[in-house]
Image 1: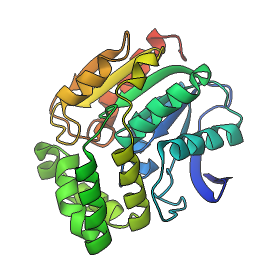
Image 2: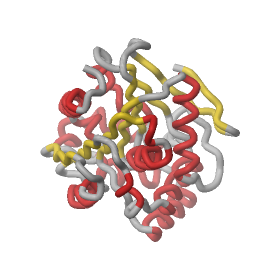
Image 3: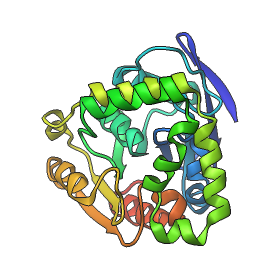
Length: 265
């Protein structure tokens, strides 16, 4: 684990695996930190040098007040990679992390050999939805949102079978900085890559949980169809964060895809 500064923001990152292994970076979702990837990372380490980090506003990274732009999130990711000396990599992100991954692919395509988008879209939600969410967290704090959001994150079957884990993930969400959460809601409010992503010319895998209520399979499929040659996979019975519900299955999809496109094994 380490820390790197990008302008006025300090970012927490982790890098695991051999330095000579192909690099893979992972970007987390709204209201979460890099811990959501741990089960996947454990299964990728034999083959990849894996970078994860807490995006601004989350985890141990700084949470400045105000709206965060997609460009700022992309710059943060680039700062982590530059600090580690990683010039070429595969990139995966979930939810807003997938939106950041799309932005990075558009801004610095020469650095990527493959792109993986999990439970995300080129445009997520509406301006009204995100303005209402920002107002809610400002007035009631994170605790006022936690129960409803966790219900949307996970499938009913996972929630019923893993009550203690659900309590832990709810704690993570409740402890997210209100400024960080609201600032990233603004990223989602202000970003629409629907037309831009047609320019992505990279091997791309798009994955969604069948039971995702936040970015539905139909929404995610529409994004996949805008990227030429993208593969599209639905994970049965899984909600919005497959790295938590089915880390082994998701890691298997990552491994197969990256091997097929020549990144790694």
